[in-house]
Amino acid sequence: MKSLAELQAIKDKMKDKVVIREGSGNVRVVVGMATCGIAAGARPVLNTFVEEVNNGGLAEKVTVSQTGCIGICQFEPVVEVYEAGKEKVTYVKMTAEKAKEVVEKHLKGGNVVAEYTIANFKA
Image (spheres, rainbow, N blue to C red):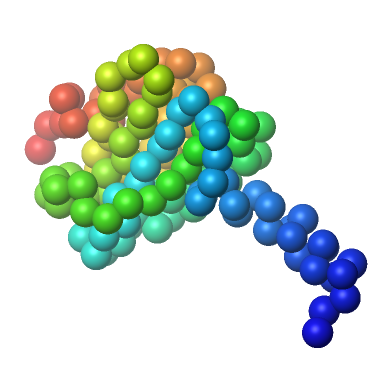
């Protein structure tokens, strides 16, 4: 059995990981984590969003979560960004590097990274 102090230390250490499941932010980032997404590399994308949101001090504003199949498997990894009062933004063919850019430009700066969206995807 762990002592109360040890449990508190574990809780504090893992607090930054909880943003993936909880949050009441105005912005919601949803990463497709079905088999197709995972096979295409969604796990590093999800981890990058969680880390960048935490490191950027956005945890109060942004909630990062995962979902099953979004239905556009050919575009995986897929990330959807929902903001109150705005149209959903769907990012496709995401990578960890692109995720960092989306956090910086879209989540922090308020500017959609248009070249990564499904509307501007070129095969």
